[in-house]
Image 1 (cartoon, rainbow, N blue to C red):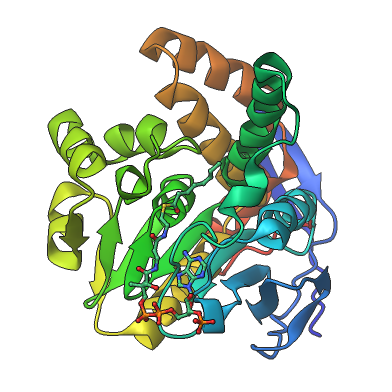
Image 2: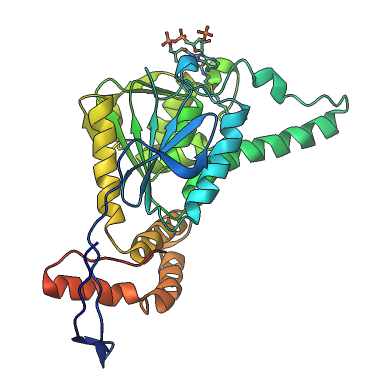
Length: 309
Ligand SMILES: CC/C=C\C=C\CC(=O)SCCNC(=O)CCNC(=O)[C@H](O)C(C)(C)COP(=O)(O)OP(=O)(O)OC[C@H]1O[C@@H](n2cnc3c(N)ncnc32)[C@H](O)[C@@H]1OP(=O)(O)O
């Protein structure tokens, strides 16, 4: 660890500020692939491939990462923890094995149905259950840390719900995407119908995919804006996602998380409401030490080191 003390005078908001001591800490990279401390799950493998970056891998490869009851519960536990983890600034989501995910576990789908005989009570219970399933992906959107998803091969049904709640989507050349729900007699209900049209900015295409359940291949996913990069294979897709996550993690966490909160808010509000929201947000956050830290680093032409958040 490298420590460097020096005195700097800086102008901020019309005031001259003396920064008595600037401590620069050298980067201590974690060894990738090791399970991240405190993140132990049955269906998810969480590792730390870079400093401040966590990789959450869907980890039921023998069942094609089908989403079972443990998965729906553990994703919420995982992302609630990520949200407040000062050692995490960005997240990569990937799938273990042959493909990204085969969607909801079809062998467990019958167990969704409550036992009540009265239709009203049954419906109320089911409504609560669907809301909890929705929370599984909404918690990724509510997590202030950017989430980059690396899709390879198949991304089916619930997989589309998952990836449309992420911030950034990359895929491999062999990736394909399928809003599969109508094929299993369902209207998609955990986010695809709400988020996909906004992600691709093409209402006609979103409806076509939802009504037909046709497969969309990687090239079309790129053209329509579902993904922003195509890489040759699974490994290079994950590596590219980790590189982007590491770049994000090197920036001010106050600025990055404020950007995410503002982008999500603005998507669902008018331009004027979005502007008012960010004005209120930044009336607090512009006072952060991160503004000074970033400015000083720029002046010194050195990488900025931001305090944990
Ligand atoms: C409140 C509701 C919330 C969410 C709703 C979401 C809706 C959906 O997700 S709809 C989509 C449901 N998924 C599917 O219809 C896909 C079914 N699977 C497949 O079509 C194929 O498995 C495949 C994805 C194309 C992959 O094919 P392949 O690589 O040849 O693998 P398989 O030999 O078919 O499967 C290997 C192994 O995995 C099991 N498995 C695969 N998918 C699922 C699944 N969705 N649910 C449960 N299990 C699945 C499959 O049974 C095999 O298991 P074995 O024990 O080896 O037999």
